[in-house]
Structures are given as C-alpha cells and as structure tokens.
Length: 627
Ligand SMILES: Nc1ncnc2c1ncn2[C@@H]1O[C@H](COP(=O)(O)OP(=O)(O)OP(=O)(O)O)[C@@H](O)[C@H]1O
Image 1: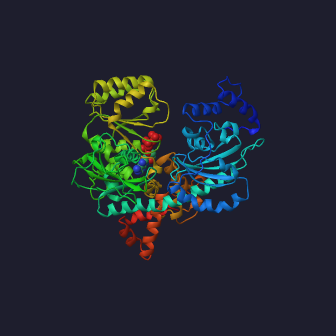
Image 2 (image 1 turned 90 degrees about the vertical axis):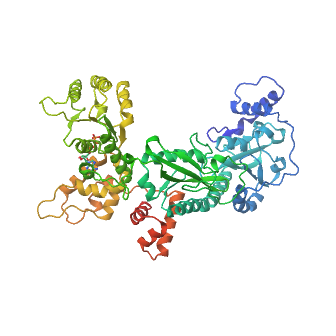
Image 3 (image 1 turned 135 degrees about the vertical axis):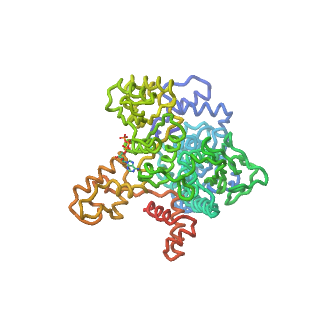
C-alpha cells in the first residue's frame, strides 16, 4: 500500500511476496516489510477476509447515485481511450461499492465491494480512508486474486471539500520496476474532471436555493441571516438587531445544526406556533425524512447570549441529501434598552462625545453603544480591548466624559514607572483628588504594559473597591502573565471588543475626511477619488485608525496636486490591489441575483434594490465587494 506521501518503488515486491507467504502461514515476518502493508494484512485477517475469494461473476447493478450521474459524462468520454490500453478504470462510491468499471483483463478480477471488511486492503479503500492518492501492488493485497495487478486510486472530494465521496481507480497488470503507477496521471485527471462535474451540479441549484430562501424571508421585514458555514448574509433588520457577538453565536449554532448536532438549549417550535420565521425546512428534493437525524431537518429555536434579550429560529436549507445552509430569523424576546441596536429606526440617540467619533458601521455602533451602556449602568471598571490604534482610548474617553461630564485622568501604563499606578488608583476611592477637587475617573491605557507590582496592586484594590471609576484599554497580542490574566478575567464581564478597521471598511471614507488636517485658509478640504477610497477600503490596516490618520496626514502634507487624491498618490502598499478574490458560491449567486435585478430594472439601482428587499447603499456596497 502506498500513498502519495510515501512512495515505494514496486521494485521491492519480491521480499513483500515472501513476507506475505510467511504471514499467511503464521510464521515470523522478516525485517524491512513496511508497517502499513503488514497492518493491512492484519486488518484483513481480523475482518475474516478469505484470501481465496474469486472475482464476482455478475457484478451487482450499480446503485443509482448522484456521483455516478455526475461522473458518467466524463467516464463515457474515456471509454474509447481505455479500449486502446492495458488499463481498466473503476469508479467506487463512499462505501467502496463499485458503481462503474471498464477496461481490459484486470477487470476480470473485480469484486463489487472494495471495502477492507470484504476484500482486505486495496488502493481504493486506502484512498477513501486517507483522502490521498494511494497505490497497491500485487502482494501488498491480501487476496490471491489481486497478486498480479497494480492499482492506483484517487479520492473524489465533495464540492464542499470536506469529505471523500468516492474513488477513481486505474488498474493494470502488475507493474514492477517503475516509480509511481503508470495510471496515476489518468486517475488524477479523471478525478479532477468528475469533481468539476460534481461541483457544477451541486452549486447551481444549491446556491440559488439558499439565496431564494434568504430573499423570501427578508421580504417580510424580519431580521434574517443566511449562513452556509463560510459566509453570512445579513439583511438590514438583522444588522440593526444583532451584535457581532450575537451573529457569531448564531454562526456556531448554525454550524452545529448543519452537522446534525441539536444543541442542548435548542427546542423545536411547539405545534401550531408560528410567532416568527419559518416552520418548514426549505428543500429542493427528497422529502423522505425518516432516515435523517431530525437535528438537521427541523426548524429549531435557540436562545441567544444571556444579556441580549433575543432569540432566533434556525431553519435548515436542504439540497438533496445535504444541508447546504441555515436561515436564521431573529427577534427580540425582552426589551433590553441597553443592548438596543443603535441602527436607524431603533437607535437610542448617542450623546455628544461618542457621536462625535466617526463610525456608522454596525460593528462600530454596537461596540460603542455597549461601552456607553456599561459605563452608564455602573461606575464599575470597564475593559476596552482591540487591536492597536482601533480607537480604545477615544471610546474610553468619550464614555467617561459622557457619564461624568468631565475629562478623565488619562495614564499610559507604557510610560508610568511600575509602582506609581497603585497610588493613583487608590486616590480614585476617595471622593477628592490630591488637589482637593472632586475625584475624576481614570482612563488607564495599555494594560498589557503594566508592571507586576501595579497589576497586583490593582487586583487588590478592585477586590476591596469593586466600584472604582476606571476604564482600562488592553491590546491583546503579547503573552499574558498569570497576574494580568487574573485582572483581565475579573474584568471580562464588563468588557467590549472594538472592531478592527478592516472589519468596518464602510467607515473609512468618513474617517479619512475627519482625520485630514484643516486646509490652509482659502483651500478646499481634502477629497478622494472613488478609486482611492476603494484602495483605502481594501487595505488591511494593521495599525487601524492610527495608521489611517498617519496616511491621511502624510498625503495632505506631501501632495502638490490639486483636486481629489488619486490612488497613485497613496503609498505602494495601499495602492496595490489585493489579488482578485475568488467569490464563494453564495457570493456568486448573490452577485448574479443583483445583476439580474439591475438588468430587469434597466440599470436603475434604487428599483433593483427595492425588488431585492435590500437598501440602495447595501446594493452599492455589495457590487463594490464583488470587484
Ligand atoms: N471613531 C473614530 N473617530 C475619529 N477618530 C478616531 C476614531 N477612532 C480612533 N480615532 C483616532 O485614532 C487615533 C487612535 O485612536 P486611539 O488612541 O483611541 O486608539 P487605541 O486603540 O487606544 O490605540 P493604542 O492601541 O495605540 O492604545 C486617535 O487619534 C483617535 O482620536
């Protein structure tokens, strides 16, 4: 037995042949016989395989299978070629059952079931088990029947790429003295062609199905999310309702449902109940439910994270035998003003300081609304985490000014000598500061840079006075010692993660305008061409808003040209277009639906967006994303 990761020259077959005879006679084996070959023989014996099985005279009729249907056009094209060679080809399914075969003499040795339990080890069984190309030559087989044949098998992967759904095997007379099997290239090429057919057949209806279900539900105005394991579509109502954490939670539950795991807190809707969402799973075909695990079949109600006051119903979207996605319809279960989405229509007006910060993306609005709510609800410490430069200090300052009506005292742990901070924090517990004025809140930046002594003192202080008016910013990345870990753990219930800039590209244009320096008197403010904005949106911004601020300042200071800033004026690393992204199946379907709607409405974007049930801005953004 040979896999692509471990090629053995069939030159060495003579010692393997002798070893096999000794194995069958229960004699000790010589050294140097590959372990995997011996293990294969042992498994065959364990399964009780008879070494003298003969060929199946009448191969059973191939079970009807989507694999055979997809492979047939490819295999039929190969038949004339196989007739000219000493090759036979065999197609087997995911249970090693032979679905199709064609070719010269070695096929006289064919069995209809190639599973190890039935015939001992062989290249098809190995390829299926390992997911890799595998070879088996003469005496490596357990069966006497196959002592004079060599075979190479290539696994066929499902369109999602997750599992092997069958194998293509090329069989020849025993080929000793060569490198890899002479049929390896043919088997690989055939497998690739069959996989392409499978993908084409699987994708077209599947992607359409999920998208249709998503659009159908969205029309009702409910908060709808479509998830297929790799992508999420979120309609505007869902974007307003669900925080990024709630979306991630939904994604995890959907993944579990797609794999047939019914989560512990999930419940089937009661009979007759239809408070929201769907009751019937979407299906393309196959209404026979009896054999399926119900977790992957039925709509399920799931609770959202405790504090969100939301629930969602997950409905599987099926295509043939597979669940190809989940439609989640979310709703609010209890009024939860603190977590109310800050989106249009249901937003709590943001007070001045926070609102002055730029950001209308859902991710930014949710994070900042949550920070403001936590700060408002109690004077206990608040932890703001996020990548460097993502705006932690700006948000921390804004929520404190909003709450206290006064500037916080800001201390940077990266600059304060170890040991100083504790005294400063202790003063927060008094009602007066060191100058006798009313105590201010403390904004402590860069907790990751705190010295040991300060961390220990802070923990002790928080144990004693849990209501310390303190906001801490923390940038994950560096290894965390046990003390700091304890401090962060203690604050985790009141922590907010700020999104990185690359996660909210829709905010970049507005940020760039805000971060530009004041133009000299009589000069217009800095503006950007669409192409330059696109380049900014596509950059990954490892330094987040700080990096954007530097860039905007540098461009403003250095440019000699007038008019909007062009892409060519940006630093090379920002100018470069990222390699064209391959759209996923669901993105392609969405793009096609949008293009079709545009065509039907004569290119009128407003009408196309209305027909699709999405906002015009969303339609623009999606079209940009497909470039
Ligand atoms: N939403 C925003 N609107 C306007 N300016 C912002 C916004 N977010 C950040 N900034 C500006 O970007 C710069 C970096 O933000 P800030 O210092 O708050 O980030 P940080 O996450 O605390 O950074 P670090 O990790 O370096 O401590 C600051 O000048 C800040 O004023």
